[in-house]
Image (cartoon, rainbow, N blue to C red):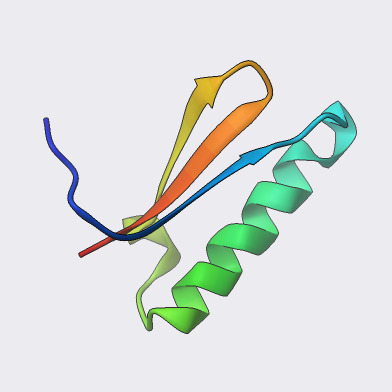
Amino acid sequence: MTFETAESVTLKIWDRTAVHHTLDALVNELSTRHNTCTSKIAVTASGPNTFTVSVPA
């Protein structure tokens, strides 16, 4: 499966209590910036405490 992206952000979140809030805020920001719905934004765990958030092209 391939997922071509217009923009991708990778971040490391050390505080486990902030993971959900941080990813949610980032998804909402990218959704607004790219004028797309949040359900089209992919969030993947790319390593320990590391997440990649991608907007489709």
